[in-house]
Image (cartoon, rainbow, N blue to C red; front, side, top):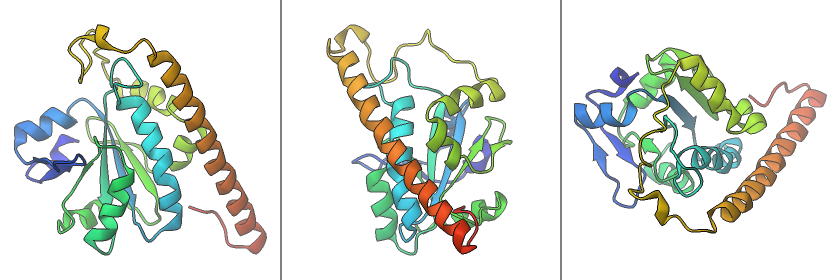
Length: 217
């Protein structure tokens, strides 16, 4: 899976837009992880509605503010946007630990063809060896939330290094005493948001079926 991006430039979706362009950097951030390739476009309304759901999903698994140990997971946005501004619009709504290819990199189209992505949004899930765990996990993420990762982890036979310190905090004792309350608050808000999105998807899918339009995806 790491081989997919060796020789490429990956950019971190943080305020500094840090570039990862050496073999050591790419291996360090992708090795021994389940990799999500998120194909989307700002022109797609369904993509725009799914982005907050994906952000919430990824945050619950990676953000030290919500969990003790960030999971072995990486997310790369594969932009199918028509302009750099459209790409920025999507990235603005995604987690800061999301990675992405520079807008001008034609490799995005190669990846789209490689994984036979025809409809968006699409989340291709890859094992660390590069084999496909799911050709499109959008519906699973919406329906099952972070439980998806447990299944992916078992299938990919990942070794969870829970004995290691948190990626972002050297001293776990520095956590606020209000962390459990905050986590419950965000979990409740995120669950409500996901249910609203899933309900909307169901209504649209039902309308499509009645009109003979087929599935949303």
